[in-house]
Each structure stands twice: as structure tokens, then as C-alpha cells.
Image 1: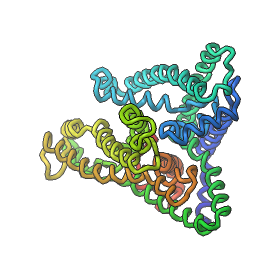
Image 2: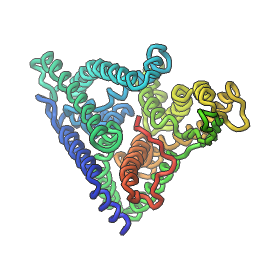
Image 3: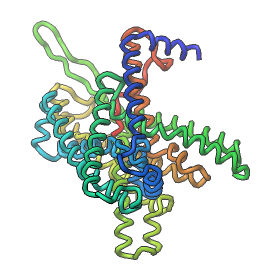
Image 4: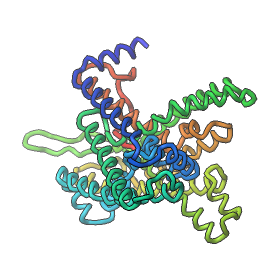
Length: 447
């Protein structure tokens, strides 16, 4: 405790770090304040009740609500949040793998990155102009009294503009946090949306256990906290887990001096795909339910099974999709052939492995070996909230036992600690950890 207090004093004594933290807190307060500003003309209580009911039975809508910190269910001006930008970023990232024009831009350095960011923003606006009317139309279809129906077209246009402007403002806040605050602003905004739900979920679970003494009462609640603490620690170890491939660089003579000859490492992460496989799987899980309705009927056992987020078949299919998407996303983001070519171009080689094709095959084999168990662990983490529900944990609190929320919280918190530590280490202060470093971290965003 004494070292922690001393570290906090050191953080406050570094002027640049203090200013960055204050900027981050100010922008975070603006974001949370805007999350409670309801769209003009909407009955907030009715809209919230409708959207919460929908989100509880739909994995994708629950994901949107989680990422927006409840703004999605509040019918807020920030209801669409940062998700359209994330969707646009994923599409552009896939284009950078498949389309030569975007591949060329990616290799152009800073100018190419600026062009890619510009295309991402344009695509974000297009997605917003589709999602905005869809959000309002869905609300109208579910509960019409929540909306002003006397002039629906005018409300649809103005509401879409406000939702799009709110989402772009959230993106602007994220960029300001990146420039003047700490860490990746978009990731921090997502983390704020998730962590904003934690206090309410915590006290709801505590009240639930105190009112249900037959279910274990306070003792069971303490056991839940211990299990949650253990799960978070395991997630930290897994997120930080890397397989280091040694790379030796040959010496070469430049002038009268010999340079090179250093040994470095290629860190391959166990969770190279981060949370993207879970997001992809949750986004596609509505398809089996729709298909089963057409094939077997609305009230059939198959349809009920594939529309029940707590059921066996729903979670089994979700786990299979997560495993498949883990391999897919890892394959498109890490290119062994390109890595081998870059290594050969810089006179580097893996000891005991020939440069070129054999190096690419070796890297691909190592990636497959660490991706296979990583995908299984990721699938297990994704369905852990379901196991928590089996022990009568409330739906709100069970979401923190695994899934997207846990992985994002762990990743973003570790990145933020790394940013703070880098500022402290530059000024010869000890970091937040006793070792002064967060081992195994090389920067990880939430998407």
C-alpha cells in the first residue's frame, strides 16, 4: 500500500502525465454525460424498457448496448456509439488484405495511414446513415407510443442526423483522448461503456444474494468475488501470453564498422485475434435462429434451441464459430510469407531454419500450434457467463465473468498501465508494478 501511494504521488508530480490524466477524465465525463441525453421527442422510460427487453434476448443488441455503456437502451444521442467506426475499421482491414489498392496504401507509411483513416471515416458515415434509420424503425415497430408518429418522416431524418452526429462526436472524443490523454481513445471509450455497468451490476447481485438466503446468501456472493478475481487473473495471463521466435541478424560491414548481429524475437500472441472472433460470432448468431424459423416453424424445438442464449445448442454453435473465426482472423492479420520476406530482406534468419519458404512454413506451423489452444480457451471464456448463470448469478453481473467485456477490460487496462509506466520510466520513477514493467505487452487495442 505504501508503494502504491508513492507511485500515485509520482504520477501526480509528472506534469505532462497529470495533464493527460485530467484530459482523459474530462473527456470521459463528457461521454458519460452525453449517454444520458435522450433523442428529442422520445419517451425515455418506454424506449429504455423496450430496448432492454430486446437486448436481453439478442446477443448482437446486447453487445451494442454494452459497447455504448447503456446509451443504446436509453435511446441516447450516443446510442450508436463507437460500433459503426469499429465496423468500418474491420471492413477496411479486410480490404487491406484482399484489395491491392489498399495493400499499396498500407505500405506507404504515414501518408497511407492517413488515407486509410479518411476512407474509414467515410465508410463510418455510410454505416451510420443505414444504422440510424434502422435503430429508429426498430423502436417504432416494437413500441410506437415511444415515438412522435404525427410527423414520422421528419423525425426519422432529424433523428438519423442526430445519431450520426453523436457517433462522430464520440469518435472525435476518442481521437482527442489518444492525442491529449492516455492510450488508445477508442478502446478507452469502449472500456468506459463496459465499466459503467459494473457498479449497478455489483450492487444488484449483492442485493439478490442478501434477499435469497437459501441460495447461499453473503457467503455465495464472496465466493463469486473470489472466482471473478481468479478469472480476471487467468485472463491477464492469457492476454499477455506470447510465443517468442528468435531471429538472428547477420553482421555486415558499413564503412569501417561491423553492424548487425543482434538477436531479436518475433512475439506471437496466443490471443492474436483479440476479441474479434467473439464479436463476429455474436453478430452471426441470429442467422441460425432465422433459418430455423423458416425451416421448422416459429414454435419448434429447433427454433427455440437456437434462439436461447442460455441453451446448449446456441452456445455450442457460438463456440464453433469463435474457433473458426479465430483461425480466420489470425490468418488475415498475420502473414507468414510477408514476415519471412521482410526478415530475409533485412538479413535476418531463424536459427536452424532456412530463409524463404521454410521460414514461412515454420512461422505458420508455430502460429497454428498456439492458435489452436488459444481458440479453445477463447471459446471457453466467451461462454463462461452462461456457466455463471447456472449458479444463479444475475444476468448483468454474469457478463463480467467472461466474454467480450472481460477481455476488453483486461486488454485496455493493461494498455493504460503500460502508457502510465512509460511516462514514469522516462522520468526515472518506478512503475505501478514491482518489476517496473508489464511483461509480454506490446500494445493491444479492443478491436
